[in-house]
Length: 131
Image 1 (cartoon, helix red, strand yellow):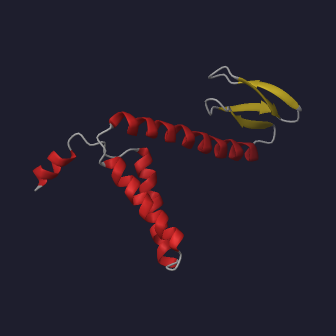
Image 2 (image 1 turned 180 degrees about the vertical axis):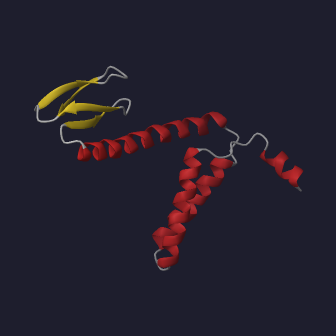
Image 3 (image 1 turned 135 degrees about the vertical axis):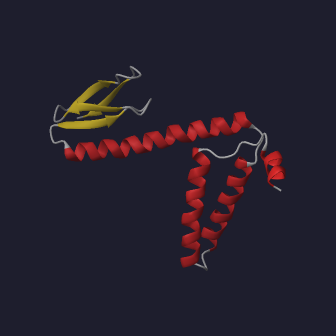
């Protein structure tokens, strides 16, 4: 039986960061559907996330799944860095922390300097920001 499962999964994409996110989303939706039994929207979202999860895990198209995963990682990094920058800005009263719109690098700038042009040290992209 184990060999049959190994043979079936051979050449399949499996799991990655996006599938892990979908799995946690499914758990949250499952708990919500238990509390709100009459809410059909939560149930539909739960079943859609299960279908997407299984379709990605059992897919043989490595390239497409890998591209999807890289896009997800970039979006997640921007969101996580934005929250990290807000957290650092709340703790540090002399500096403000900004996030580069291109590469999501956290950049420290001095506070109360008005509108300034910031150049990202990582990707060299310039952007205007209020300090």
